[in-house]
Length: 331
Image 1 (cartoon, rainbow, N blue to C red):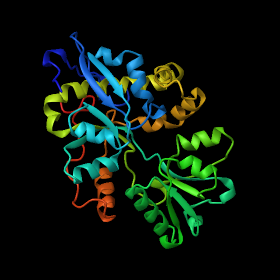
Image 2: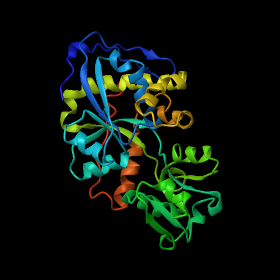
Image 3: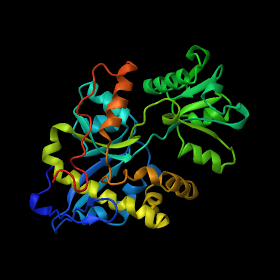
């Protein structure tokens, strides 16, 4: 990874109305290569990234951004840890686990501020709340922290976890639900699979995990290699600043902003992507008065403790995130 020449970056402090965020302004210079690996295939969760690319915001900060998608969902965090990409999109639980395993990774910004993971069922299952999961089959992707989520939700609802059959359906969550293999799934995203089922007339029942017993967390985060963070800080800061502009485009003109996304993945259903962006947009935005990509230290502490208590982490997590490279921060 190459460091962006310092002369390229000319930061100016200009308050953005209503949010106290300073805008990064980049002077002329040759575009620097920058690789980003997504967590999954391009979809509406990445709309701000593609809006930034399609509307020229990465060019404005002199970055030539290549967006890659992984062959394996476990690959992104490993790729960034190995220094083969500049940033990766991953999940807060995965960052905590990776650091616990000794990988040199750190979250440098929140792409989606709140959990998207949810429990989804169909009307015929008559599951209106966590207590109704007693005696049911719940499909997960076989990820250990999803099992921890399910246990926490059941215990809070007063349901003995041994009465619930957890079934590993891999990433075929919606098919397992639609074919009746399971009564509900945990791991599907309420904004994506939930919206897809709604548009298909399935009237899904959705239980959001952070409202049912799981501490809130950042669903999607931008992850950097901690060992090269200092030398790459200029380019990462420029990337996040450009991404904040792409995300703002979604609010101003969603149809135009997601055009680049639809071009990147022509297999996507345009109506679904527009609806998902609409419901997800508030989660792209930081808390009032905070810079774009802000990560709440207390939230990271609470969720890290949850992971530790669940036996997923071996040691109390430290240094898993930084806000220093967000727009206007750490200057």
